[in-house]
Amino acid sequence: MAMHNLCFRAYCQATEEEGRVLAALTFASGAEAKDVGRNRCDGYHGNPILRLDVCLISSKMIKAVFQRLGQEELRSLLGTLENRVDEDCSFYFRLDKQEACQGRLYLGERYEGDDVIAVHGKIKSYPKSREASLVNMGDFLGSLLGH
Image 1 (cartoon, one colour):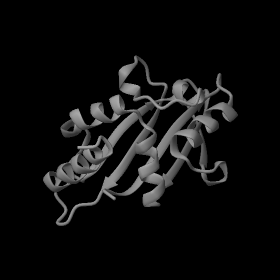
Image 2 (cartoon, one colour):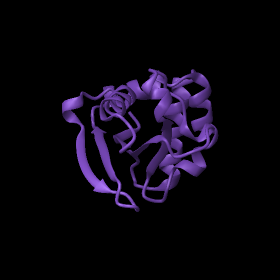
Image 3 (spheres, helix red, strand yellow):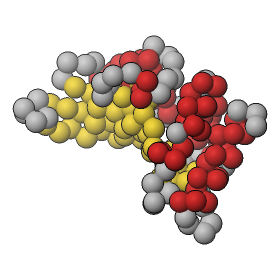
Image 4 (cartoon, helix red, strand yellow):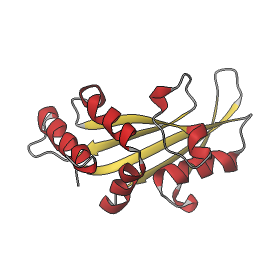
């Protein structure tokens, strides 16, 4: 497995149903609702916002998330890999929250707006370097695409 962990974050605005956002997050991550952290905060204008977070550390669960993405989504992640990996060996992408509510996983970058589930994970690389992380993540995504 190419990753140490994979963490998901979604925001539930006051106009949204918490149960639907929670369902989208648990669908996207494969985690159970009881494992999701909740943090209440205020928006810029004082509106209540709920932040939902969950981190996966199981290699099996992390791989399952990527396997549930379609081939087009995996190709998009692989094609934009250089832009998704930082110097700290973290990998970033976003999923469309409304699609996840409907039981589908699509990258959030394909659509306008910030109604997303933000995902980031730490890539395994020894020694720790961005270059090694790019190779490891590229190999992992490529294997899922049958390369």
